[in-house]
Image (spheres, rainbow, N blue to C red):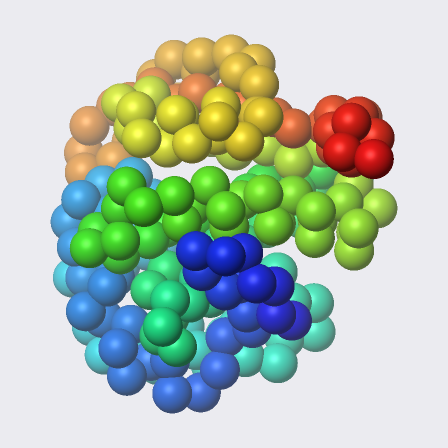
Length: 181
């Protein structure tokens, strides 16, 4: 998969991406806003394991955010199961050297189109940490709507924290597409 977003490229992960991945992923500021399954410190071995996991999967839901031919982050979907099978969680991270350039906004817009086109979804949602103002700002900028505060919903770095639930519905996507026509 490959989508040109202007400021970046969203593409399939490939062998060789592990070479530079730790220089972007090994950052405590990134780790503090992600699930514990994202390691810190982020080593070369972690990068190799990630690439083995995401290259040629049965269902491709994780993509490299590429700038200048180098993978500098990830954007992905966690497709729901059972009664949540028409929902997917959107998640992303970006190397700190690239923050504030509109890259994540462009990547999320591309993923919204991809998710609603490729999967039979009715809903995308994201659940950033309540203290992550930058992530909240970008979600609101691209049209996600705040649905609620989940108090004391996660523990990160041994601290109990709130998260915020944001969603973007397929009906929003269709309305946005019709406005463009």
